[in-house]
Image 1 (cartoon, rainbow, N blue to C red):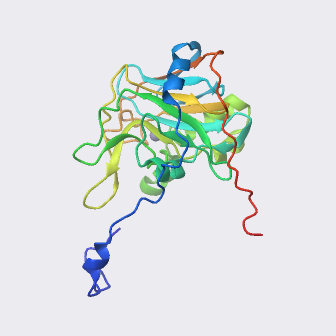
Image 2 (cartoon, rainbow, N blue to C red):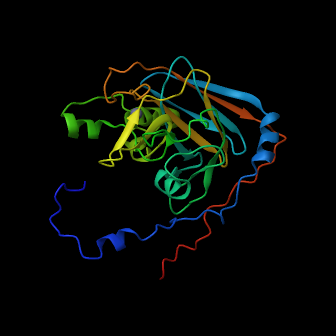
Image 3 (spheres, rainbow, N blue to C red):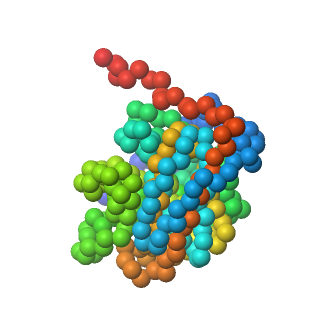
Length: 284
Ligand SMILES: [Zn+2]
């Protein structure tokens, strides 16, 4: 946080230093681009192979094969979802929201990819459709589907309010992963990770640069759709914040279910991206 009255006086060339133009940390022109047109053809011939309804203030996991598709749909009312992805055959490889943010920006939409953590760093899923892509950025600097936030959790709740709430996205995803895999809660919890905030509308305030949320513009029928780049376990929590217009980490907000549908087209050939080619010698 910036102090109102800084302790250090500004140097004479302060304005010149501030005027240096920024440069993009990670230009992505060299990234291999997804073949969205080819994917669309594969998607058009796909049939539904499963679905799961995620109850409010709870989470579910579902398996999606490489080259398959999954769609997250808002059903009965505005609702935000916290998404985790794991490699179905090696749960240590999971979604890396921080590097995804560094590559694609704070909010994701069609064509952006969800990357896995180091040392794997490969696309786990590609966004292929987004019915909220019209939203763009609003006058507050807010947009949808962020990779800024982490996930609501009982530890931060205890830190800030001193009370325990058990149906935060972190706990919901922990229970869902444990139920899906047969692991204990203790084994599952460390595998839960920072999320893609599906449908959530967020940004940073212009004055204090604090993370803000506002009521999601999502309405029943809206969806976000992905192609699985590798065999996935997809975990989704219907956040206790509901549309996240007011508060989370409590039972106060109106909450609704979210639908995950899985589609597959056996005739669609998909090449699974290899794990990152860095040799991991780290200079030794
Ligand atoms: Zn949440």
